[in-house]
Structure formats: structure tokens, C-alpha cells
Length: 109
Image (cartoon, rainbow, N blue to C red; front, side, top):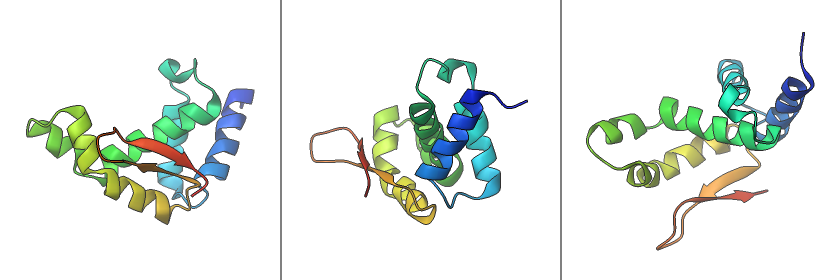
């Protein structure tokens, strides 16, 4: 049985990353439904799950962390790779970084 939250996450996925491959979409949907994400809106949970999935599966983030880079440093170095995957998936959002600022998200790019 599908819950209302699961349906909302599925709708958010279709609206936010419409061309995500099925395998990736399933993993992201599952992560967005995790217990620690329940306090977030379905859209926020989906976005955070998407970024984490891309970061760990499609970038060198984990290698950078293993090499001793701090979380924010590693995230900075993989920013372009994350955005490239988001572009391929037809994302309506991206991450941007401005000098002296941490990466932040933008809508409707």
C-alpha cells in the first residue's frame, strides 16, 4: 500500500528530476522515505536524498573524504559533478557556490 507521503515524494521526484534513471529514482525515493527524513516536507526530503545519492554514487566525494578533506571541502570539489548529473536528469534546481559562500541551491534553472 502506498502512503500519501510516498505519493508526494514520487510527485516531487517527477517534478524535480524527471529524467532520473529508474534505478536511481528508486534509491532516491527510498532514501527520501527514511525515518530521519519524515520531519521534512516531501519536496525537501526528495531534494536532500537526491543530492546525497548523486554525491555518493556519481562523484569522488567519498574518496575525497577518505583522503582527509572535510565535508564542506569535499562538497565544494564535487559541486560541478553534482550539477552535471542534475543537468542530465533534467533537474529544475542546481547547486551554486559564490566566492566566500557555501554551496546553496537555486530553483528553476
